[in-house]
Image 1 (cartoon, one colour):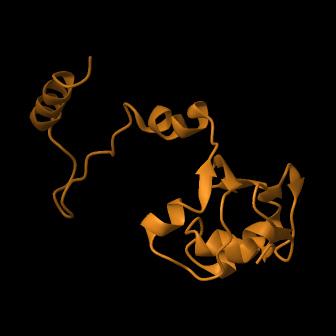
Image 2 (cartoon, one colour; image 1 turned 135 degrees about the horizontal axis):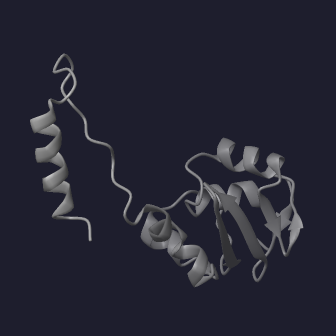
Length: 129
């Protein structure tokens, strides 16, 4: 096998959870083959560079092996080489560092009293520098 549909390959190497998601991302223009937007039916071969825009991240993969059936994660990793930049990989950490979920009060507990609010602020000041 020297060529394979891009949507099928993206699904089989576990970049997308379903083939439908891979196809829809191709239709939206989120998939590029060697720098050009690709349709779901576009064929790829070994050595092609696949650009994927997924969840706000720009991932880049180089095709090492073509597989048509979905395989386990350890086998899927052998089918591509990750060329995603270090900056792009750290985007997730940069976005979430120092951002915590808001406090959640039990339903029906009402607003915190002045004393409870001060206690919470004192507690949080110990963790935030």
